[in-house]
Amino acid sequence: MKLLLSTGLALALFGCATSPTGRSQLTIFPDSQMAEMGAATFTSMQKSQKLDTSSRNASYVNCVVNALIPELNAIAPAMRSTQWEVKVFADESPNAFALPGGKIGVHTGMLTVAKNQHQLAAVLGHEIGHVWARHSNERVSQGFVAQSGMQLAAVAAGDMTSEKQQLLGLLGVGAQVGVILPFNRKHESESDEIGLELMARAGFDPRQSVELWKNMQKAGGSSTPEFLSTHPGTDSRIRDLNARMDRAMKIYQQAQASGKRPNCRL
Image 1: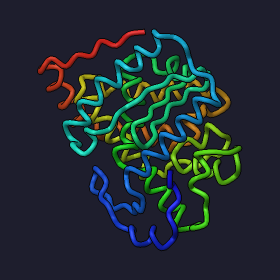
Image 2: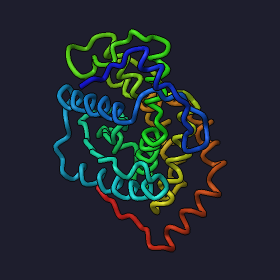
Image 3: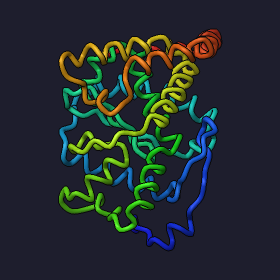
């Protein structure tokens, strides 16, 4: 598997793309290569971290994902070929992630903080938004341009080297390996916007996205939850979500009227 492109080839493939919200992006790597990176990372994580064995938890998370993905496919035809895979990790930290190629991970701790299906949909819609908007490609591309010698293939094999940790961080799972390289605020805001629309289209109550972030803030106590630590401030995030709420509520009401009423329960 040739995950590492030469500098010359990378520059030859250099190109600008446009995100789902119309923002210009730098994306060097083809989606197929990013999907390989995501799959290799996901396989590695399943070997190094404990998986949750509860079929109940798995069914609950998959129920929410299965309600969101058809809405993604409806507005993003290019994503229809993505084969989504979901794993629940036995970890008390409230965290979740999605990798290129459609690999989704949810910590059991998130199932405690996200109090209902609507709040979990807000989390997963946000993470799916990162994949659709190709944020990992942007980060890896920027990292490659800045450090053309970085060993991008390190994720596929070997010990946890500093290069491998850096790549995992660029893919968006840095907090998993002790290296926090957060998505920037533009990425986070964009994913919030996408996630809010996806959950509303699927019939999940978008108002619960605000309640989720209030829960995340409370869960921190005197410290910051892992999921929150790599994201912008809660107050500004809630403010931005509320600013988009009128439109999201209209979409939600239309979805409900058309019979979209998810029933995902733990």
